[in-house]
Length: 377
Ligand code: F6P
Image 1 (cartoon, rainbow, N blue to C red):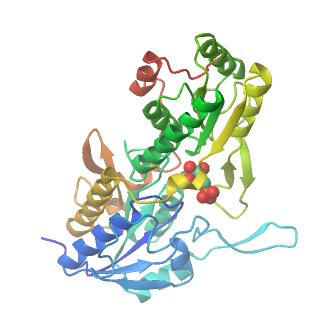
Image 2 (cartoon, rainbow, N blue to C red; image 1 turned 90 degrees about the vertical axis):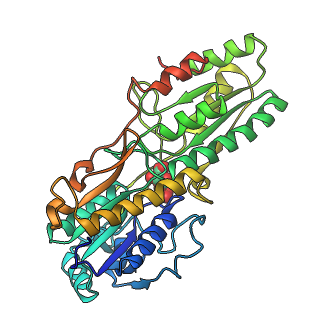
């Protein structure tokens, strides 16, 4: 039986959005309502707590949103309650304030006994601050990057991979018509999962990922070698975080008010320019950017998001962790998908760690066996 003490919960979506967020919100609200639990939606992630912007969510409010991209609650990746950037000093540096007490007062005012926190690394760090203040939080991992420690899969990733694959398929036909090299830059931050999966799925000739530093000479050698075999075009799928041997990742901008201020970007152009200069083969680049975060979630992401939302509610209702705890510190868990099964780990376990592509990742070997190059030195 569910704990009689849980009658009202809050749900928020934080960090960069991804397809499947609405499917989680829907699962949480519908499950909660069917057990007599009220759900309150917190707008724009932790910013909604900091600014007391919340609204009730009923099953009617979430009906029909399963297949919608984005999040009906909005999101923010600049709202850490303990280090909130509330303004700017004349020198351009942010004014930082601790708004945790106010967030606690909002939680109390609305009678929220627990929070379902849907987000990535940064959002989970914010949740940990609330856990330390006695608020039970259940984390649901989201990100197109698929880089959250402790879970083999995050929802949003499969949709991003499909979008990138479709885009590369389209780029391939124009590359073939014009006998060009096309470099497609995909997202993923410091993890190469999107590039690796979309690169393999699209049959890209060269895949550049952050975990394997590349040599531009090796990239050009592959392209020349293909040309020598009569292959009159080549496709390079480059992760935004990939870097040359001994070099650094390409940084597009710094967002000073963001907890993770570095925004990567620029590798597509740099690599395409180098290829054209060194091989003499005409080259172009495409940056897929936020297209990968938008649109309707593929079926797998809808299913995973629904499973995650359902598991979050199971944990909230019946206690969580090995001891079925309901208290804040031991009962705050992160829902995960591990070894083909749904499960949960301590919320703190995934903090400050990234799940990167390991050298023994089977997809690396599979890619190499079909002739794909990672352009190692
Ligand atoms: O973490 C998701 C992600 O889309 C990354 O792949 C990308 O590097 C980053 O967010 C972009 O952030 P923003 O939306 O702030 O530009």
